[in-house]
Amino acid sequence: MWTTLSNADEEDVAKRAAIYARVSTLVGQSPAMQLDVLREYAARRELEVVAEYVDHGVTGARDCRPELDRLMAGARQRMVDVLLVYRFDRFARGVRHLVTALDEFQALGVEFVSYSESLDTSTPMGRAMFSIVAALAELERNIVVERSVEGQRRARARGTHVGRPRREVDELRLLSMLDEGQSVRAIARATGLSRTVVERVKRERRVA
Image 1: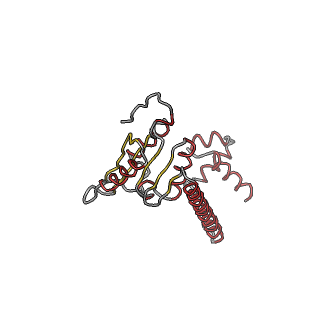
Image 2: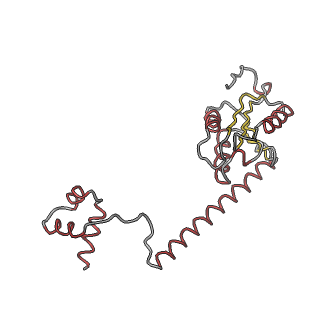
Image 3: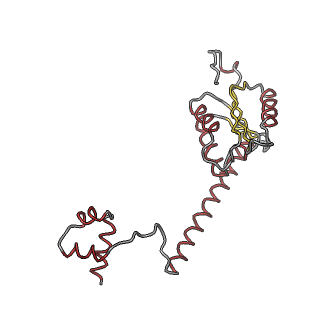
């Protein structure tokens, strides 16, 4: 549970810290080491640990992690000043997820500390490291986009259809309905096809 702060002056109030830990399997792994290290770190910095969140048996690749989701909800409600994690890969699914989360924390005024990587976004060095991580994530995105575009170009050059597979179309039926003078909208409604598909058949017929 989150604790409620008194109305003491801000400089006299310890920063509120939340700890997040994760283990991938329920067998043979324990979050105790992560929690002990982060509790000691919080004590050295005189941070008040107001909440601890642990995802047990949850792989880092999963988009939905119950305790991480609870943590993010609390951060968005401004119930925490500092987030402590043992290592990047205990928190983030990858560089892109890390950068997105850090951007959100920055907007919320929440400091992020990764103990193993010595990243603390409250310090100039930590902010510089975050800038480097963000630049690497942007580079990764650009490379993925370039590869995707090049792959599509090569596929088209080989005559391969790119995109969602085309639906099977009874063109004889469509042509018959067009000959009967039915509108594109009426044909689409009767056949369950999109108007775009009917328009394509109609256009191809004109070309032929």
